[in-house]
Length: 357
Image (cartoon, rainbow, N blue to C red; front, side, top):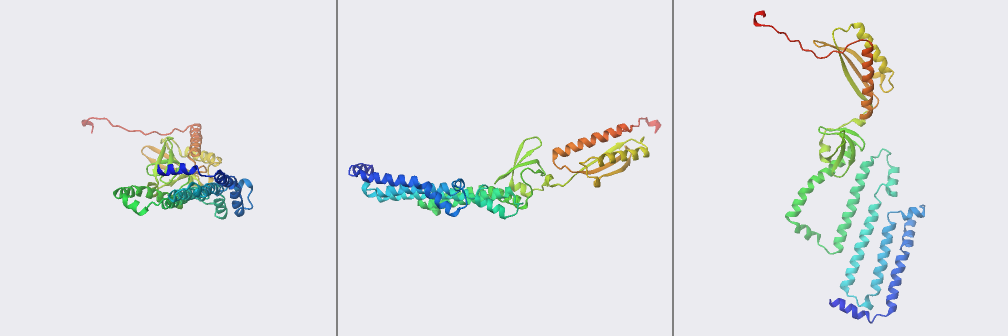
């Protein structure tokens, strides 16, 4: 209250010219902040257009810095006329430093995004096979580190003793550390997934407990949409330790079936059936001809069986099921056209009495 009273009393003795000069200084910096920021960025990106310069990661942070700097200079100019205490000036200086730190941290962090010029140049100079999900993940880690460093700088500017803060957490800090272990495991699990390139977004994968399409990979979890159209979020640490089948990595997919027949079928019918099915499969553009295998497979008490083994080109679940359906329908037509009957499981039961043993 005493400082406010002194401030009001001192206001009476301030000449109007001091206020006008301070306002002019502040207005000048705010007005010229765009031009100064543009010139500075243009010096490093002289080949860029005006629009590209203004979209640069450092343009807005520089503009914010010069605007805040103008306000700080204006306040500094009014220090003597307003008789502002050193404590208040130190506080204003700290506010200026905090805002500047945050602004530059945002600018640096913005340089590590997929749309930034820095990252685009990096991608052009590296392999085209660079995993985009791995790149996104790495850029997130870098941005978190940048903001963490900025936070420590801000705390140091505000005079907060980090050592005392950590020590003051005591048991709470231990609990937080233990709770963070799972998060750390999941983050490292995500890094293992990206480095090993086990799977990518859009891949059809199968784990011991889940199967579906990968929709996203975050710091903590892998998101899978199963074939019941529900979403499952699996911890990355679990995914990294699991055996994973990536069906999307297949160059071709196997389809195998057995046709059961009764003992009524003759060898001539079996041979004719085999030839007809082989001809149908060879004329199917989605079936790989070199991998077609059709054999008279087994003779058992239930009848005979014909083994049909092939590889098809489509590997996606939807296309694969369409091919299976198409092949099954054509095989069924061939069997019916040849007048051959498929066998079905039978059980023979003998009924008698003890005298007929």
